[in-house]
Length: 124
Image 1 (tube, one colour):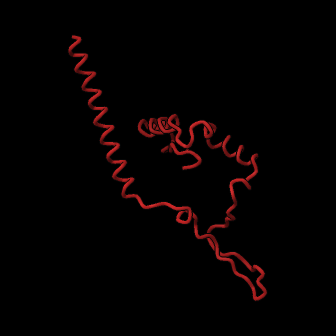
Image 2 (cartoon, one colour; image 1 turned 90 degrees about the horizontal axis):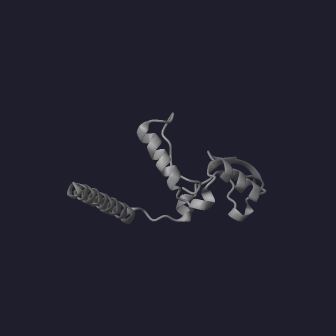
Image 3 (cartoon, helix red, strand yellow; image 1 turned 135 degrees about the vertical axis):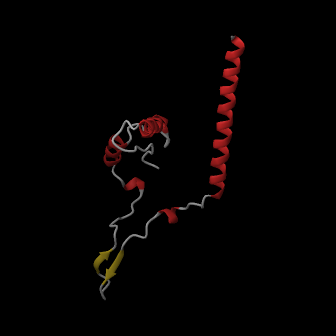
């Protein structure tokens, strides 16, 4: 009976190791072939600004109306408000929230939520 338990445990460990190796291989193949990222590639083109002959702004044309600012220019109260609503554990998990990922996966597999859920955090 103990021999059967050892075989089951060994089989389970072997399966887990195989899954890990397969997962790591897939990850590294995709990571190796992924395009290189840079801050310039991640920013949108923004709007076109139309000026008159004197250099005064007439209007702005485009789908997005954004003004890029530095992180240090965002008021701390706004940062705290966004984090408190969107991701309370943000400063504890350093960008990867295993609790949220497992919860989202469970909800998606079991269909226990109204729609698909994501496990991403504020910086993803």
